[in-house]
Picture 1 (cartoon, rainbow over the protein chains, first blue to last red):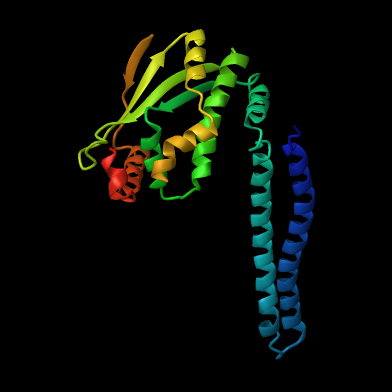
Picture 2 (cartoon, chains in turn green, purple):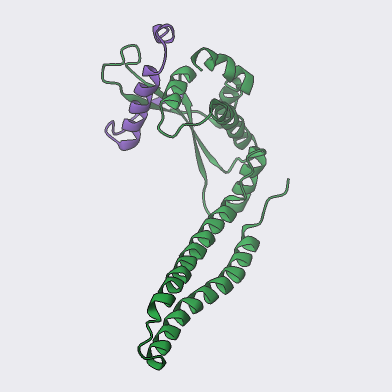
Length: 208
Length: 37
């Protein structure tokens, strides 16, 4: 797998972005200067009306250039995450940060996937159900991979359960439970709860 | 193995949003689907 290197992108952006920014700011101020000089040398001629729109345009170009630069910078920072190869992306991220800091991973297992899916259906920012399937299957797989491969990463196993589901009008509460297992116990538990994407689709199919 | 219930603030915006999302999702189900819960 090839991961894009963020620093190279950033270098490219800074070099070309600063050139564009320099010229746009230069044009912006230059238009005011020329406006001023024309006002001095061409008495009585109302040149402001002609130059004002140009000044505004260059100002807008400056803002747009800045916004594009910020957007591209964020995109280049996000680029080391490959959606199609999550396990390799996680490995790359862990090997990047483990020398600098202690990494802890909290795995929260929903007690009931169908309840979880109802909440997913009702969220304000809507996603296609394939996103739910991919993330719930992938997270279990990735956590197992971390447990087996990276012994220096602290792993925590929690479960979440909303109560009062049988009566929606009652006061529901979210309950989080933390279990302290040994590494081996946790690995065998996570191995048992592995779900493929097809299995998750079969669970949530009646609710789609 | 030890089990511990974590204390979380039930009025936290994230928790409230989860509850609201669940309610909205539940209301979007048809009567047959609702009867399963």
